[in-house]
Length: 311
Image (cartoon, rainbow, N blue to C red; front, side):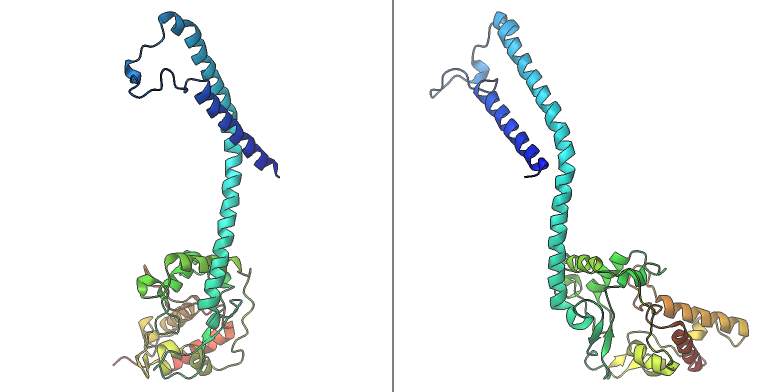
């Protein structure tokens, strides 16, 4: 048995003993007859002046001193022990929360994101016209990928909102009951607590699409949301993300070297950091930790090559 447990037991025994003494031999004991119809306390004759100024006063002062000494001992010990007790129970509840989150993740998320949250794949949305599997990102490096992203102010809140709302146009559904999903806030918070507990410190150097052409990179990663050729259309209707064939013009490209170069840098920045919606989720994820710098450059080259003049 630890010293803290012994101290708690001693305190409880002392408190019980003090209470017993107070009600058995102290001021709390019942005085006078116990028969039915007893005289109310407010109408009973009390001590005489001599008794009040002698034994009554001494007894009251003795109990006052005893109470003062007891509280002088009890409160400091309580203040010393209570934070430790609270922290221990916080750890217990945290471990329970992690276990609940692990079970929820295994049941709802592991099929796409992998059993250890290292990434996987999912079937494309029905009717989208897409045949290739939809890559599900790794979640065990979520913090490392987004902690320096200027579009994400709070990584934990971003993770919570992503699970709550899902990602429109992708196999990732909204899980929160507030958005038509099947989970309450406690379940989602448990999943996030579990994911945060298994984070790795850094993201490995991206290796995807080394040597691939810009069109190949676009077809493998971007066509799902932006449509074939950046048209903004899919087989099942409008794509969830905007068309890209006028993207450079939206960033100010007008055929002059300076403005075209600025638009190109803006497009590259959007690909690297993702897109932020004020007051909501960045629906476009950051690709900086997924694609190499050369792959992003080739992707920007491809996007620049498909630009069309506004009609």
